[in-house]
Amino acid sequence: MINVTISVDPKKIKWRSVTLRKESCITPYLWINSIIMIKLYSSPLQGFTDFRFRNAFQKYFGGVDQYMAPYIRLNGKMEIKASVKRDILPENNCTPDLIPQVITKDAGEFLFVAEFVQNLGYKELNWNLGCPYPMVAKRGMGSGLLSKPGLIDEVLHIVSNESDIKVSVKMRLGYESANEIYDVLPVLEKFELENISIHPRIGKQLYKGEVDLDSFENCLKQSSYPLIYNGDITSVRVFRSLKERFNSIDHWMIGRGLIADPFLPTMIKADSPIYPEDRFEKFNKFHDSLFSSYKEALSGTKHVLLRMYQFWEYFILSFPGSPKGLKMIKKTKDFASYNKVVQNIINSEGYR
Ligand SMILES: Cc1cc2nc3c(=O)[nH]c(=O)nc-3n(C[C@H](O)[C@H](O)[C@H](O)COP(=O)(O)O)c2cc1C
Image (cartoon, rainbow, N blue to C red; front, top):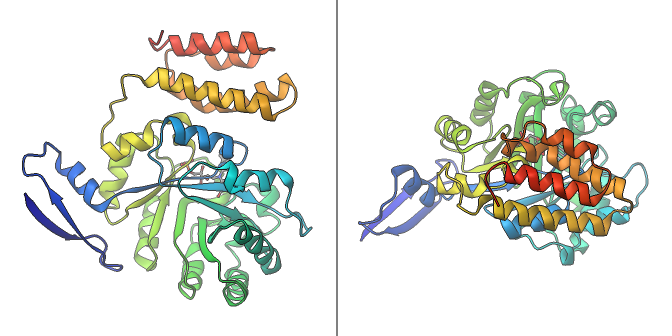
């Protein structure tokens, strides 16, 4: 037996003592992984990662340490929609750690949502400063708020004075320019935030173009917070190259990649690009569970099939042997034909 003690992060030094078996057959990378304990967060996707998805994902795949719920938006009224409440009600959620999120530019709305989630037992509320959609950003919310560091300061000041909720922030680099973040980070330093996750694109880009890793690296230098990297993690290979560049980061957030390849979190944690033998059997069960829950929740065949089609826009990336699969799904008009197409797609990868 060897006793090893290593430092994880120079700023927030945490010393962890671990015992390794000398004869353990693990790669140095996996060894380091197991020590610094990479944490993977599921990034919220409105319309996709609701409690039905999160529960099914956790049951069949796991590997995620924390899930974030899609944002709560008040639309001018101090009222929480029933569907929003349903999504974060503790009794509807079987995931280990769930963080609700709010999108707003108003301290009063923030406090209202904070109280609502605290009454449900949540201790942390994430603030969305990243949503890129013009309908949101043009109203000064999401990434549209990043050009107003003064307003961010004001909202955080009021919230930290009037509520004891823990606040974390999820943001982009800016809306118009990647320089906007450099005026926001010093504001965030004034408050005691849980963490900051950064998707290194600007709002105007939506999801186009490359992630701006140089700007993300500059943010790392300018923030004393434990930054979480979020953006375009789609494979173990991509993760490895990001981890190599940003070695000090041990918290990573995955959104679309996790829907396209639900095995990704467990494979990243195992540092292995190899899928389990029962890959398609597991996917099949996960799919059936998701399909059943939407049949139960949504009214009308059309709505259910549309929802499943939206998922398949991501799932299909795991099925290169079915180039026409998505088109076929789009054409289905009833559950029987949908099921048949899905089975053909899954079978195309060799699962019977
Ligand atoms: C359809 C869709 C809905 C999204 N909804 C949210 C949301 O509710 N809250 C949020 O913070 N981010 C939302 N995002 C952004 C993602 O959480 C994530 O930051 C982004 O997709 C980049 O990560 P990825 O490359 O791993 O997907 C959404 C993204 C998409 C594509």
